[in-house]
Amino acid sequence: MSSQEITAKIFRYDPEVDAEPRFDTFKVPVIKNMAVLDVVMHVQNYIDKTLAFRCSCRIGMCGSCAMYINGRPRLACRTQVSSLGSSEITIMPLPNLPIIRDLATNMEPFFEKWKQIKPYFVNNPDAKEPAVIRPDSDERENIDAMLDCITCGCCYGACSMVATNEEYLGPAALNRAYTLIADKRDIIRVERLKVVGHSYGVWRCHDQFNCAEVCPKGLIPTQSIQQLKKRCVMKKFGIFK
Ligand code: SF4
Ligand code: SF4
Ligand code: FES
Image (cartoon, rainbow, N blue to C red; front, side):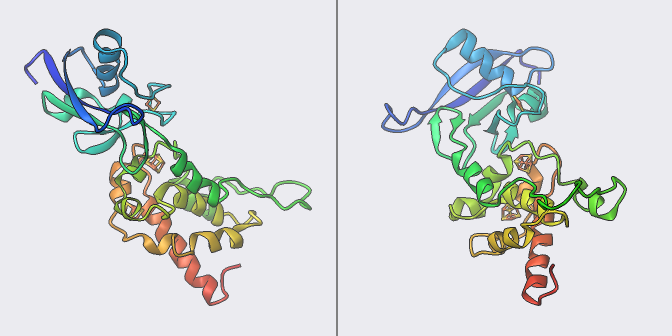
């Protein structure tokens, strides 16, 4: 990019005040290693203090800064302006979620789906000690690549099934469910499998990997969903214990 300035086209909407959304355009000076989060921070600090967005860690860990940037869900803090290959950036809120204001979305529907799959391990109350799963065991290796979710919601924003069916549990919650269902120590895995096998669960997924394409942590929720489908079938034939 040769220009020393970029043009940021930013979605603006306050549902309590505005009849409809609009885009505001801002000229922002480019700095070295500038991330899209720096762009919105510049706008808020120096041009329009009313711009609303969410962020915290600024290092790709908290998952709070997910936005729809140049047509794709991304973490604003991990998206370098230079990587977009354009002097114009369009920044919108993450799709498939209600808007609180401007770029800040209400994550409640996303976490409501997590609640449904009970996203925590349930140990056998009679166990004297937690069973050990060795780091090099097959059981651990099966879920290793699925464990680093930061609940950013990028996959949720990219999922066309979430867009068309608000009941659908969505990629992140299903991915989390798989990591627990694959753990034989978990005593509610059969109950959990019932939840994900319901009509708003795994069978809605059309396996097109949109979620995997946008996950900033490199997770592949589609694969977890395929594993869950397999276990649902096993359960039907009485071979899932
Ligand atoms: S693969 Fe499934 S979960 Fe992932 S985006 Fe597509 S429909 Fe959604
Ligand atoms: S699976 Fe990936 S994209 Fe989806 S919420 Fe977790 S970290 Fe974000
Ligand atoms: S601010 Fe925490 S992931 Fe971007």
